[in-house]
Length: 462
Image (cartoon, rainbow, N blue to C red; front, top):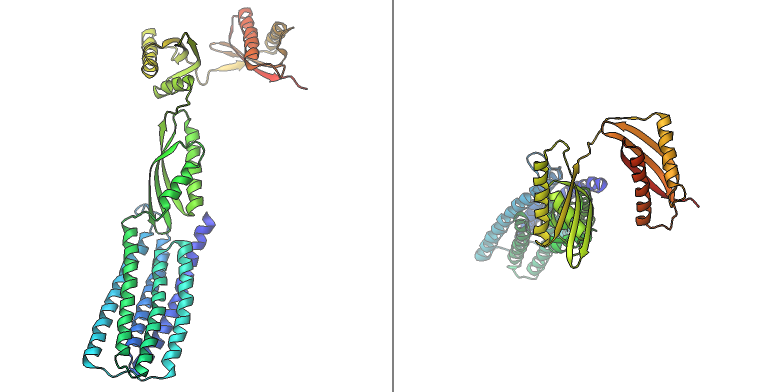
């Protein structure tokens, strides 16, 4: 992204700088020849090129400003400077068109003599047409690649110069064949072309200033965001252009069961998707959590608890005779009074019934919340060996074997035992869990000081 943004300003400024030199030289040539032969049409076209020269200088200056990044006062960057400059150029064009029309009317009314005809004006005009065709194509390509309104306006100027020079040639040919009004008619044609092109530029520029969404941008942005995994739908999407940047404001629905870090990942992927679609894009992503039809009962209960700011685990769900039975372990502060803890459990149960119906049966087991950083020390090596021997003995002959990596820690609440074990790879998770639970229960009965046992089962190595 950074390399393309760096090259875009360089392309715009270099093309604009070349256009300044071309505009100046051709404007001077046409003006000198127009004065020499007395051609109003050629003088008008020279003045038109002079306006183009002024416009190109303005464009060259504006693109250097418009490519500056956003700052504390311009949160959307400086791209709209191009639209403002385009309006100024349009105003100059209409002033020029009006002046040409007034002067052409005066020539027609007074019967001004036709210009003197020679090969020189035709040579100048043919060269001018060739130069302007090259400049218009180069500017149009740069404007398309960089999405620059200022360069697009400049390209239209040079395209109008081609048509204007062609009209002047026709007028001079008519004058050469004795039609005295040919030169004035060509000047009027130049003025009309300027006005029509100015109207087209004005419409496009005003639409940009009024934040009209670029054609097809809404559909493209919506499709790009919908294709991101995890996006349920796009509720609302707005697009506007500031310079070459597409600013996209999207309200997107995501599953309410997703954790925050996954939603953040969806946002990053959506930004990458719109950047790939539009090149330079800035996405404001608002995630709206929604319930999906395929949510499980357990997921719905976890959402209810999370929205209440409660820590729950070991959620069990049963369907007995068409009746929903729910069991929950609720963790609260161990120093909390029972009546306060009971109120929290009651409110959680009520929220679950509101979601599932009053006939749901909810039983909540209240237990103290484990401290995040309990104080503890490693037990003595002989204590670890004693615990390991007991675990090995409890597992002897059962589905669980190879007790290893045994660790014992002393904490304020009691001993915490961690161990690894192995089981057959084909055993189900339920069977492994039941077998390990049995060993843990035996250990706690044999050693009352053991507060918690944490096991990690691994498949037997081949």
